[in-house]
Image (cartoon, rainbow, N blue to C red; front, side):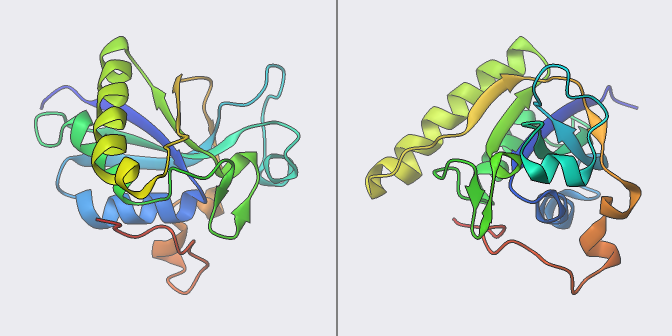
Length: 172
């Protein structure tokens, strides 16, 4: 088996982020996903959904992806991330507002950081500059990861009528 890599993205409600990535990449390079919390302030440990939603921890709702880079590249996953949400709004996706809904890429290596920066520049130039919009996505080193509660994992697969942010769709 090929060596695996990890990608971590925050793009609003983690239910929809996980759902759209798995709809497009399950059996096409994504081996495992989990939703959880990352990027919180120092000292904010063991966050749960209620405290993250209060804004007091500054954690983002995020998706951690284990993938096979011989099947799908990190670059392709970053491009897909940008296609599936609105990266031009600060701390918001659709009607979901708060720091937990920010757009962020949490990189796991210098190579991932360089790729994320390059793809961001390309996507900005091709898709947002022509509309007069600016990407506000944070590109940060991956931090401590906290798995979300069990009922959040694969939520929209287990609850197909559950809430899904309207920004989680293919935008181009």
